[in-house]
Length: 274
Image 1: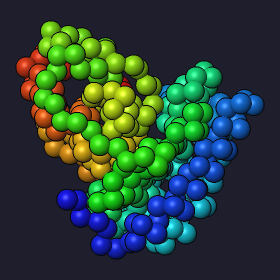
Image 2 (image 1 turned 180 degrees about the vertical axis):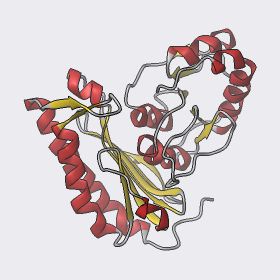
Image 3 (image 1 turned 45 degrees about the vertical axis):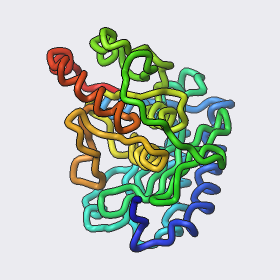
Image 4 (image 1 turned 90 degrees about the horizontal axis):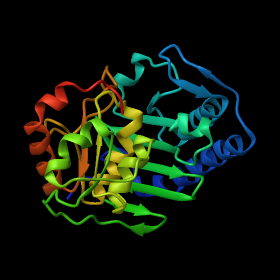
């Protein structure tokens, strides 16, 4: 069984965290319905005034839940201060900003609290469909209050896998089927925890804020998140970037890892993208 946090009362934290993230989702949803100014960041990725508004709201409200915790958000300039903290908030105010801009209800708010490099509480909230995924370390994972538990088959034939075609194409010969595409990576990953997808894949280049909350939700539902090398991600490091990722129940994750390694030529040709 996973070990709960040694420094914070996760049971006490869960309900107020859910309330804050839902409020953040409501702010984003207001902009989604009425329209939001948008521009392009230095790394050529899009951002909107909704991303910034949600980021500021969460930065004002989350610290009260874990005093002294560090801060890492996609929409806040990063500093090295967080590296000295045992606890750090890892936040994506809107995961799926391109979908948000296009008017597609495929975006989520993702928040995790990381302790010593591992997420101990996490929430992924889909405001458009009012779906909340939340988990605490050792306390289980829930979708709108209903506990999730993933089965653990090993076979790939017939498995519905979400991910980019560059990864799915080489797996077609193993019987893998293309699952529904979810642009927001956090949303794609939690669909595995919920059983809506049998597995999910991501190219290299995801950041901490894309995956930390979903990682815990997957684990507490009985699935796992690993790199193509089989190692689980760790967080709050000097670099926030990760390599290619597999989300699946343990036996299927191993089968996918083996298949992807057998198709190494296809992997080596990948461009970093989600």
